[in-house]
Image (cartoon, helix red, strand yellow):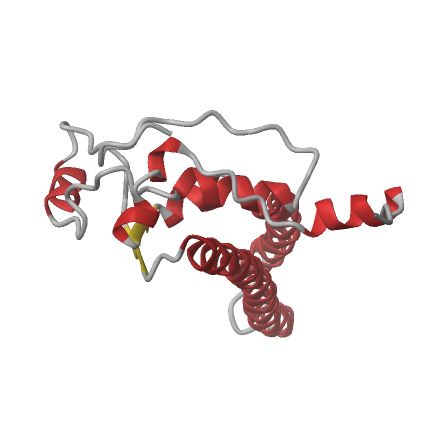
Length: 207
């Protein structure tokens, strides 16, 4: 039998999907359907979290720029107050202030729009990756349907969370929660990150 070169074997191992099944989703192949906590997957998506953290610096830069522009407008407004209403100096300062405010709004809207578009792209890319991993997992185990659910326990002191728990689509699941498996597959494509501490799901699965 001809042996494959070491490099070829390594390439095959890297390309192979991580289908190590967690006990939380042990019954999913048997029942042919599963549930997944998308919100929890996003919280534990290392690449997505890194992008959001890096974007926090951009938010601070935007806030600093707008703060400086606002201070300049305040200086112009204070200067206008020293002039007599109706005078040439007052009119000039008034026009400068009106132009500055209009430019400030345009700049603020442009910066905010750019940031929101970048944030939306990060969500879209992460969601696409998660969907692909769910699809690969489902096909591998012959799972026909994967439902989205929320495994968080509601806070008994917060009315909104209690109502959200009452209105959950999935009220009970019997070891069909594939969330830990999907997180493992997502992390496998983004090595070098420490695993985030797992929690106990309110729907009955221990993650």
